[in-house]
Amino acid sequence: MIELNGITKYFITNKEKVLVLDDINLMIEKKDIFGLVGPTGSGKSTLLRILTGFMSPDSGSIVIQDKQLTPTTKYAIVRETSMIFQHFNLLSNLTVLENVALPLKLRKVSKLERLQKAKEVLGFVGLENFSNEFIRTLSGGQKQRVAIARAIITQPQIIFCDEPTSALDEKTTFEILSLLKKINEEFHTTIILVSHDISVIKSMCNKIAILENGRIENIITNKISEFKPISYLEAFNHAE
Image (cartoon, rainbow, N blue to C red):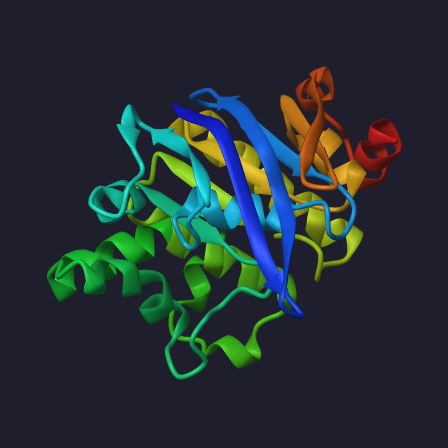
């Protein structure tokens, strides 16, 4: 599904060349919920940006869906993926329905078809009664559900998640993680999840890459993803 070979990235800081990612080699398989975890400055967010095509590595190669990620192939590959952001990245001047339908509008899908599909995915995330609301009226959890609905409307093979629960309380975090788990199970969507929160990573992921100083220090196969908690408190206690 995703293969990284020898990924290296430098940043220029105060006219100095700083190594941010150092020879990253990684394999992510279809249907994985793969966690990237590490302290601030470990390189996990930079690695995610490279995976999404937002940033190019200085050396190394990336293969996604059996296609090498290059400037020529990037657009076609990125169309098969979606992104969920920490702060939702929703448009305040659009309704919930319009926000969700936006990716299909950009793909020139007819208005009738995209709005119908948007209503379907809003039902999937539990917001079918919020279609005509504006973003400013929603809670943080509802905004993230809108963002998730927008992410899945194109039926992506891969969803990248950048700290998707860091702005949420524990109860809402549990609800959002449960929704992502449902997407993975029902649609067989591969999910790559970046988080600084160990409990989030442990409760969600079947594989974890631990980054430190730009290198992968360890890759763990995590069986905690099989848990079926009764409540969100039980889930987080179990994950500790």
